[in-house]
Image (cartoon, rainbow, N blue to C red):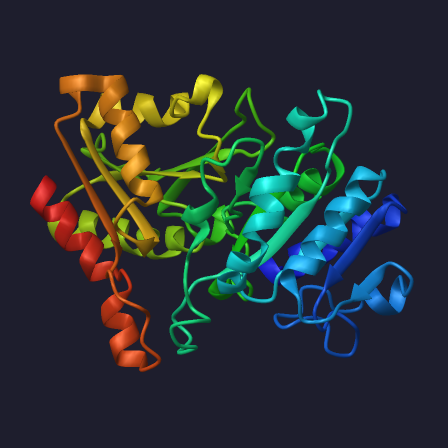
Length: 340
């Protein structure tokens, strides 16, 4: 069965086949290596003049790609580890995301920056972080996070071919070998896909087939949806707590008129209880913003709201300590039980 890695690789291949303006830029992309997580494998062989293996300078890579986009190309940048996106912040935040406004809409910057985030592989404190929250809320920058609940390559392809502005495409290291969700192989779940009016990035709703109405709304993104699905089954069978899971693929901007997506608000009106889950640290995270906007939109009809996230410490290299610092299924279960 197709994996997330297969899907992303196929999307890059299709984008480069269909549009000669698409270039790949990053470190160690050339075959036979094909990138640190093999998403670009085979592409330098097929498109040798458009896969550019760069020096180790993330700021230079991103600055070059921004200039290429301004000149009419559609570059895709790979930052080898998400931790290193701190090195591109100046280029991305102070220049690329602002050019459209600075030049009165006379230019566009169709640039996609891909980067793997996340831990759970024992890579230690500088190669395991989920720091995408540092880029959320930057005007002019769209931040997307694919999920295996659908074909993530479709989302990447749309970002490359349709978006006329910069896109930060957040992948997770553990997603790459995940198989794409197959409803036939997961009869316990009912999946619904929402197309939102303000973006090409869909939102997904997942509930347990034939269950009573949910009493708790769970919201997460990316790889964490895999852990939350396991949590949902355990809560249902062990505690008779039934949940609805919402998985957006666009993290920022938040929605139409910058409100939360309508399907999420509708779920909260039904349940009155909100639990957000993310792999990044708790303070000032994505979940905090979801809670704040939900409270602002729903007022007292939102009865309880809680967050599950990583500990406020650097991520240890020790596997046992890393597991203790990152959110696990048991953490989500305990939070849900306290709320309902």
